[in-house]
Length: 128
Image (tube, rainbow, N blue to C red; front, side, top):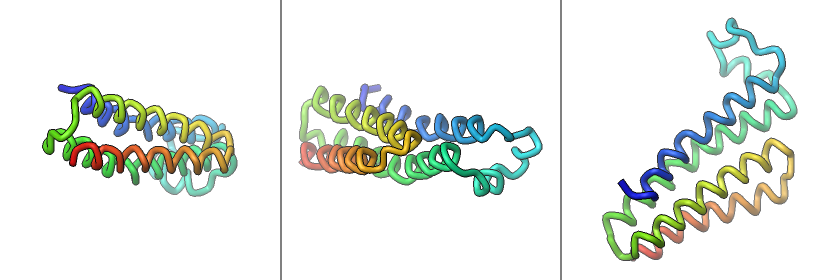
């Protein structure tokens, strides 16, 4: 398995870090709340809300990244090392995005989001 494929797994798992952060930072999450965690997370504010929003954004963008990696591999238009580097950069951008979201650095978060989307586009472009 290539590094880029492992990066897909990392991107799939990253939103769950935000899930744990959202629940843990709420301060009042109990095992009872786990019966309907979406309802609980709909009531949180501040850091917990931003962590939950980062989680949701992670789930939204990960399929596009996974598709880009798979298509880039299948098209075989670029060296594997380049695909791996772009995939690693994407995962790093998502980790930074999550940090920016939780820290409420809105402008930097948006810039990092654009970098991540640009990396997805880059995977398609280099595969062509």
